[in-house]
Amino acid sequence: MIDRLLTNATLWLLWLIRRVISLNERPYMLLSAASLQPWLARIGSLRAQAVFLKAKDRCPAYRAFLEQQGYQQRGSWRLGELPITTKENYVKKYSIVDRCYGGRLPAAGAVIDESSGSSGLPNNWVRSAEEREDVKRILQLNYALIYHDSGCILLNCFALGPWATGMNVSMSLVDVGILKSIGPDQKKLENTLEIFGPDYRYLMFGYPPFIKSFVDTTRLDLNQYRMDLIVGGEGISEPLRGHLLQYFQTVISSYGASDLEINIGVETELTINLRRICMKDPELSESLFGREMPPMIFQYNALDYVIETTETGELLFTIGRQTSAAPKIRYNLRDLGGTFTHKELATRLAANGVDILQLAERQSHFPLLFVFGRSDLTVPFFGAKVYPTDIEEIINADPDLVTTINSFQLASYEDETINRRLKVRLEMVKHLAGTPPSNNELHEKIFTGLCRVNQDFREVTKMFDPSCVEIEVYDFEKGPFSERDIRIKNRYVSD
Image (tube, rainbow, N blue to C red):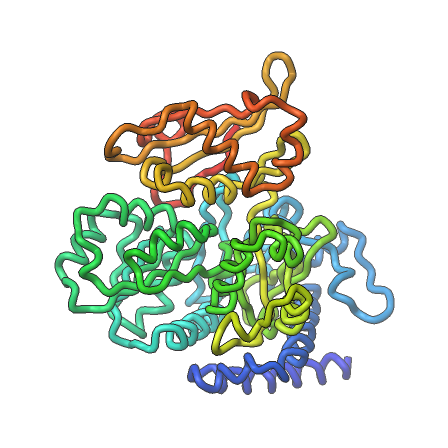
């Protein structure tokens, strides 16, 4: 009991210090110093333990979950010995009220978000006023550190309404610039840029497919405008980043999830340049990440998040905030990836003849999080896993496909002779200029592209005929693309 009180008192003092540091971006940068990282990781672990103790005592769902899983602490407490929570065994099994502390919704100031439902039916998540304020403060600090400009017009093109990302971006950044919440509406976005004109600096937020569709089809001359872009909701390939950099001064991706919170990790100059050199050097990417095609790479604060990796490569997240409405402990998003400390990355790069200091002039020493994508959104094919990011890479790296294809879907199935087949459905852009590639040309581009970007696919090609990869072409918003909801993320895996 005394140990617990001492731990809580220590954490309260550390929280107060962090709160003071977080009032301004300059002292906050001190947290990214190399010498502090082991301490931040240790404090993050203590915060995770405090959240566990509070959840065990005060959260009906988590207490019942521990009993159902047969958890019993043996010896010293270890986070890695706690049962893993998932959408299936925890979120869908227990009510939203029972998942909150005290078995009730928090008082006024709480917000209920809804996930996009990209992997099934949407779920609801409760955010307390305190946790929203904490996320708001960190998002504002990141904004100030990256853009150094309080006079931007912020154009929020994420889905609005109950969806987590759009509303949280608007609520968090309304104080730091001139905000307009547009949603994924191209006409409203065009009208806004036209009304306010090129004299302002714009910071745009949105899903990568929406932003790509906008720059490809807008009637405006975007080169007249000074714009920066933050994308989220799904990964972005380097060819797509290059495509968007024709119109935006910077393109940065942020990592988060409705299940947890937005802005868990953010791309930095270091992570972007690391990904770019791995694109040019598949052997380096293989050495660092186990795949020739590099993942998305972010940096995160170990003080706030403890991130683990399972034996199967799935990421587990624990948020060390006791003021949340509901605990998130060892939650499995089904994202595949891993983590490095900055020191570990420097050592691995040096072993491959790369000096980490050459990747960025100024570097944060926060740890790195790398993400390949959703494990439940991959498509199995002859033992290989085909990722939506593989197809995105192929499309955006090809000058013909990037202006022709609006979206795609993957499916793996057995035909009437019980042979495994991979189906790639392609949706044409809305206003197609010129003659699109023939089905044979598309098949050649997709098949050879998969061999290039996915070494597992390349290895298993000897096991099947190329005709086992099928291409289906649809006009814009026709066939399986006809019921798309522009407010949520694209669905890339179909039945």
